[in-house]
Image (cartoon, rainbow, N blue to C red; front, top):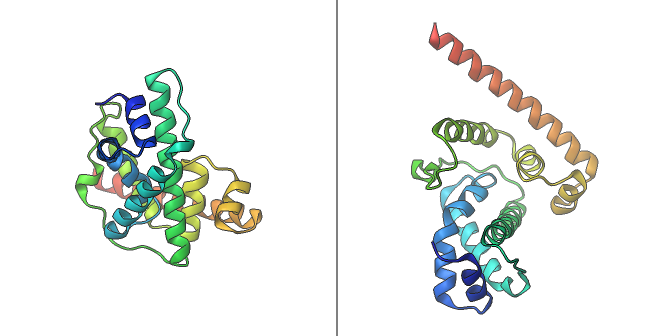
Length: 192
């Protein structure tokens, strides 16, 4: 893996070699973020591409630190924010229409060694349950619970009242709790 600071500086200078390296190294990470919002594979790929275009266009504003690990974390946060915004832009264009379609299995493969198999399986199950939520609930849930935005930020991003954000989150949680209970009930019945 290339030096993150070198990649960031290369991207800030708009050098295609470094843009390609960054794209290849962080494509899977970006795609997983977008999949939390956009579930049609072809559309998600388009959103990721749009996100990277926006990312490369804004690198001159990117600030770095002295340590490799800090730069990597900052870069991943920056990519995450841009991919979330690109996903919301796409959903807004489609009037928050529900996305349908499967997520190819290879997308769940993770090259990092930080996650064990159980965490991967739980993550995949959670994303599948979130996918079943109505779009307005799903987006608020993702932004609040997974991506750490507060209700004021969500309301601003989605152009909805703060109360609607809170209400959508509450309903999303109730629906997910029902899904988890059903899943647990099936697992218990199958184990008997």
